[in-house]
Image (cartoon, rainbow, N blue to C red; front, side, top):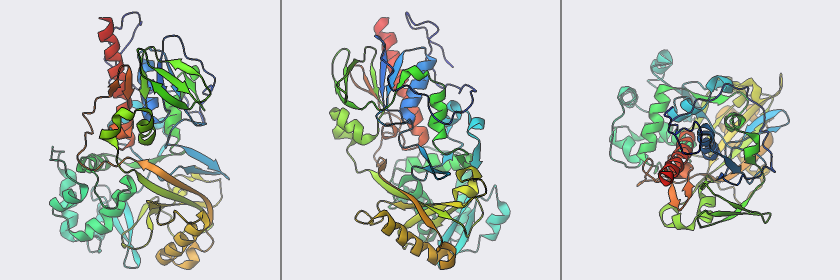
Length: 459
């Protein structure tokens, strides 16, 4: 950690990375919703990954801050609910263990990460076909060479690309990048389209190729994993290392009033002065509301998804594997059985948990949760057989209107200045890459920019 001396701030630091303290992982935050702001503090608006990352770096620099979260818990879109003994992530989400910022900021052993199988099962032509990482599952990979999920040449190209060192290539769309690699429509449409749509919620593959390059490198270097206690264990771990008095829940920010310092107006009528600056760490729609000056550069269509959970007494697959829809038909994009990945996602000795993801609304905007679930069960009956899915019972449906910002090219994934006004900074996955890692990086950059400006003002 690089240390910088701030005037009147003892032992301060400007961290480029902050190791997580080895504290036990609590099941929920002990944040105090009535925590007051100190006379000289930094206000952080939003308690998602970006806001928690910014808070972590400010805390490491021994700077006072108050984090304001509008909801009843921390994590933003990265949260887990407990329902009837099952852990339900709010949308299908996985952690790539090779994310560089996550490796620096999180303590992976405390998360008790459970990996997915390094590959996938792909439904095509009425049956499931296996796709395997040739370096981690070489025998499975060899056995899968003749299957219709791409040609043998496609699989060789993917293997070669996996070995190559990352290069700086001109930005284009993912679709164009895959074609430029020499891949055929059979592997693009049957594997990469549903696989990447499950990550970016973009079946057209119009997302920036830079995101594909980053994700592909991380997939080659690490695992896809779930924390044993759900994806919400990630923000819980970050919050556990912050002073509980520095966090206020159910504190909706109505507006930011420009000034020196800027003021923050809360829904309850309270006004707080951000004497040392304000970091806006909310999602893109809320950022556009609070900071109208960024609208011209940032207004794009959001990516959306629906995640449907079922309880099942009988499941057709026992592996911890992602299952993709490579048929080009139906509304299901991908699915898995989280209890196969980590038994703690369900009650001890109980039923299995089924997670099904639809990109967009699946045509279900006008349908009830029960109607949408019934269509999903009918569709999956064609995959596994009606008898395998007949007993599945709907547990909960998450309709996520804003799952991720649209990051089609041109993008500025690494060069966006977090300074958006006098004493006002911004962070979030819409200000970096639309990944967990991007949110963590953007939070750090916002904190670093604020600290540098403080140093400059006092020098």
